[in-house]
Length: 434
Image (cartoon, rainbow, N blue to C red; front, side, top):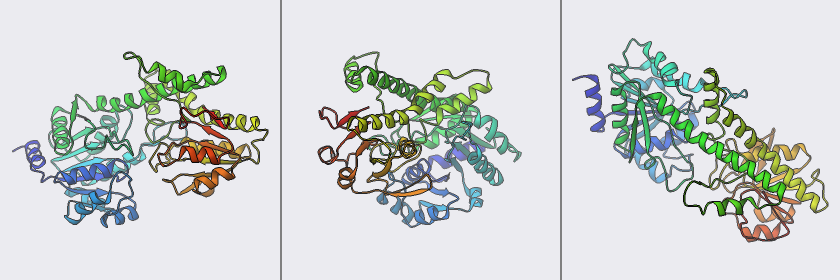
């Protein structure tokens, strides 16, 4: 029996040991799905407090509930460790580590490199390695594979390598890890076959593609598509503002067309780990090929201007009420990057607060999901919504959490700048819309 056949049998019988490197928003939910499917899962992370919490059945990820993780820990289906030597015991290893951008907008591959170095150190014949971290096309073949091949093992025969882009949408109650279709592409057809077989044991739909580069490009296309279309409607919002046109009404009316149009909505800026970051991986890679990613660069510029546009709107709203921005009390509603989650990564609220402070504003905030916030060297704490609105000179709604009460906010606030169309259909002299 070949190594390929032996691993396939282990996967189908759910006796393969599954390792997950990186236990964040991607890795932990994935570990839960493999554990619920019957695999014994070991999660690897460098942070001891995270590992200790997980081994007690406690979760720090909003989408992973205690009733999911507790029985898996209790029945030995999941455990976490900081001991990377345990990688030698794994039959499958998924890499789910961050891939941030440097300040120069170049990819930071250090987390992938560090993880792959650990895997290479303990790699044994018959192991399937799958990279899930979002990255530029060619990363798996050009960066990960050579590091693993230093072991002397041959890919496609002795060990197997795939790329499968994560498609996590934090806070989405309809689409989660299990029912979001999973794209997977391998270095060789044998790699793709094993990768697809592995995911098919725990996920509803698996979509095999012909190569790792295709799978890597799939993720970048998805988020570049969103980033560019959001950039388009953000530019439209600035145009409509100058012409006195309600951009939200324009989009709603255009969306009645049953073909050839997909509605996107303006906002205070892009947030999260994916949409503000991933397209610049593609732009960086294409520049290496002598091609300028003009749409990406332009959309990035427009989206990057939205926090400044919001601050200008705040200043205009205060001026209309004969108040300067300097020394005015500004209360921010919502600092998470999107509604009903606790994630503040790349949140436009952080840029807006920073610019408001630069212009002399005195800032407080309320967010039911983010009790504490550290930025600009200052610690902030979420306050009571009604009290914060009543004490403010201007209220800025940045994240439209479902917990926010429209009527109560409008009643308590002297001025409201709405960046999310939260007050759709409401007419009030207090309201200033994006």
